[in-house]
Length: 266
Image (cartoon, rainbow, N blue to C red):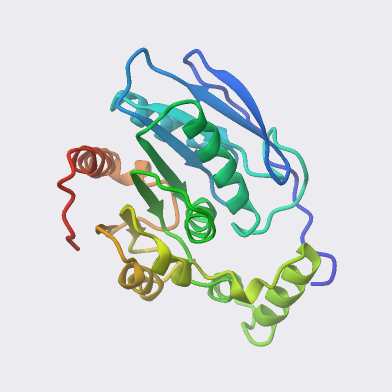
């Protein structure tokens, strides 16, 4: 409660099979990224991992994007993998990492940029779009939590611990020790400022993020949007049980967005 949970820093245990370049960007911390480029591409997908993850954990999804004809740019958030530091803020300060990666890709001439993030990565993308004038062609966000308090409460429920007053104390103290007011870290509010095409993905068996949270986020999105749910999936990699459907859903979203006929369907 007082000193925080000490976890080993996630490390990248695999590397891409394709030729790749390691890029170091100066953000709020130095962040390590992998760039994999095709000879001719439809655009670039920037990938952001979840809490306790690292960029290598997204290699299977990066392979899908490569097969669909896109370059990929994989990011280690601050405190993860090859990036600097030992701190994580569940997407709050990581939003600056999103901006740094987006700016790098844009400054290198890419005009068709998509952002992909899962869990904490999704929250970081949403905060970045709310805080900075980023204009990706579209975003794909998997199972973002609605508020920091709800995300913390879900963790206590999962282990059978009392939510009140513990969750509130953790949010307060966690934000204080990391230099921000964590009660204001609310993707459900960031959603109101998102204007680009958005694909929101959710597993109906998710014990960490409720359907109510997802519906609130979806309702607040002020853009062309689509919500896709997977009935038997939880807070996990959707490729495990729904590989065919996930690839189809991602491919359709990218194709329709590129063709400027993305429809506002739920």
